[in-house]
Length: 385
Image (cartoon, rainbow, N blue to C red; front, top):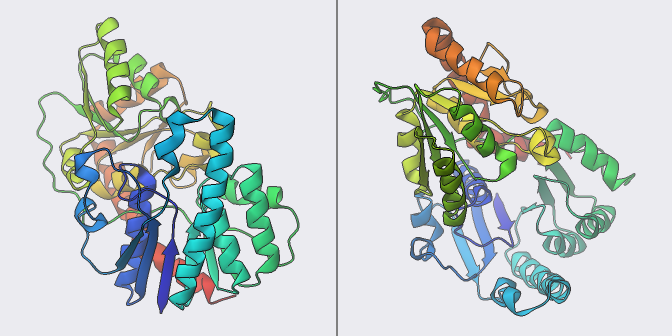
């Protein structure tokens, strides 16, 4: 089959959605499909980003990437008041939708894939009567949701997926009754089992606990800092985050005189498996105070953690417990509660048998969530319609 993936994202990007896009395309290509990625050319400030997606994400050139010259709205963001920039951005997105759909249509794909940030590209492909797939990773803003709804009303050839059960349910309700939309199927994110595997390299004299991801408050970075105050006989390693975020949290840590937290900052994606393998415990401390984090986020790091085969300590929130089970493949703690998190850390350090058992079970579970398995489910669902 020929598959066309259209996105409005800056690629390559240090953000998780870029990894998700490339890994899905790589997996679909691995199923003997011809895949073409269409994305706009955007300004890249980092030298490491001024390269191909194949180099940046360390993937073989098994698909084509059409990097299209197009107006970059972010170039003008600082020059406009917020209200005018929103109007300008809306117009640019509309024009990208028209251009990308035309380019995609000429490729005569068997089906077209979009994420929730490309409503116009989807709408115009729906108008061209293309068979479409839309992946939702959050509930889009009202206007984007309206555009998707119009496209769904036009198209009888669209299949929708969402990355958590709660997101599937809430999005279906918000879209309202649409004759052509029978439901939204849940399709969690995935992992590259070949790259994220257990190499058993952890030989730390002091237990090393690792968090990998962005440094937004919803991800639980403040919780790690507050937990570190109660447990000074372990080391915390935090991978990821923009430089300004790292600087911000390093100042907080220094002010509180916390000595056992090391901020590594952003690293090349290909180096992440090695850093996780050198860890003793992996942390997923997402906050319950943020609705997206609590109910809608299918964290890729969760599946990467599982595949590495290190014990996981995670907050007890729906987006985690859709996949994880307490005392079976992880230890769950009360979200946003540093004492509860420290209690689970101590339990894992002191109970070697529990440590081994949940590590083994999480690695076994990860097999169900490979990108290849995810791609198979997507393709199968499309042709049921």
